Length: 235
Image 1 (tube, rainbow, N blue to C red):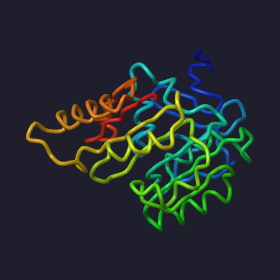
Image 2 (cartoon, rainbow, N blue to C red):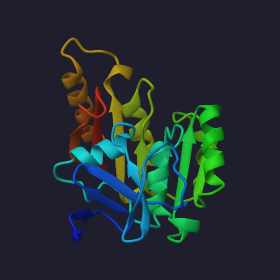
Image 3 (tube, helix red, strand yellow):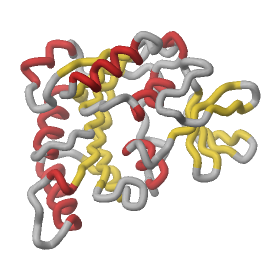
């Protein structure tokens, strides 16, 4: 069900869409994460989610059929591969966990960069439910012990060759049956095809389907995140 708040649409208890702008209810009041705007709607503070700096934000802006399905449920267990410095992660936390983790969610945020992990550890000090993990998305044996139960929602945004294989392997090991998986694929990180990025994106779709994953929508992020496509699958 789509809830209307004035001229705004509500994606969830914490996510609003106003025109082309996306806003999340700020879990840490009066604090922005990456210089984003803060604004109050009916006395409640929200943060602007910049879709040009977030693959998930871009997908929410560009999805034609699944905009209201892409996000996990509040309180879900989530695995984020390639969390970076936490731009997208912070908005995801607003929705999944909320202030002082009032929704009792859990987001395991993995990244290969020690610098990124330092930023995520700092973020986790004020955002309960966020669990930063240093590790390579390809090497489950090194960090998989952190995930005792399969997760409800898995998001991957890694700029490594073999992104599809990494994603399929992670989905098979960590995503529960009926769970949602989102693959943000960067064409430039894959072996280039003479037929261009369209052929690359088509090959990825075929790989996902051959792995018995159901593609709910393939979302072109061109114009917000060029050279990227996001695949939303269910297991």
